[in-house]
Image 1 (spheres, rainbow, N blue to C red):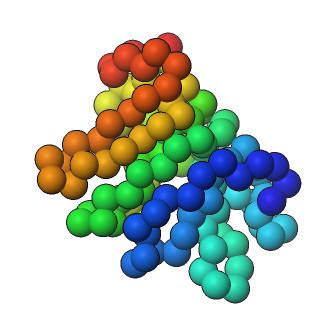
Image 2 (cartoon, rainbow, N blue to C red):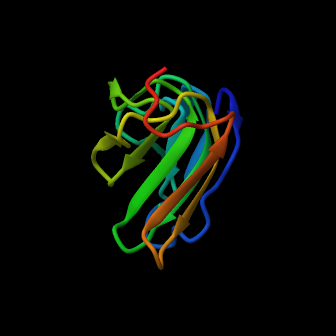
Length: 126
């Protein structure tokens, strides 16, 4: 890594562990803000994000990784500070947040994602 790693999502036993942070390479390979380790090498998760990721949450039922941080794109598409990765594609979560996200929690019982950070406001675009 050529930058900092800030989190690891527990419970990702069925998927390769993913490390988020503020970096552009992992193991000498391009990896924008997040990389996955398969036991022998690092891989990017698509095009990653254009900023830093500081929080992860994992939905084991759908094999979806949620990321939060300080970024405006995920996979090259608009995603205001919060997005999801389904193993092949990045998706924005609604209009995103108006400020950085530094905590995420997934409640499997209610299928609800909770986010915390710098005065988050769901649906904000700034």
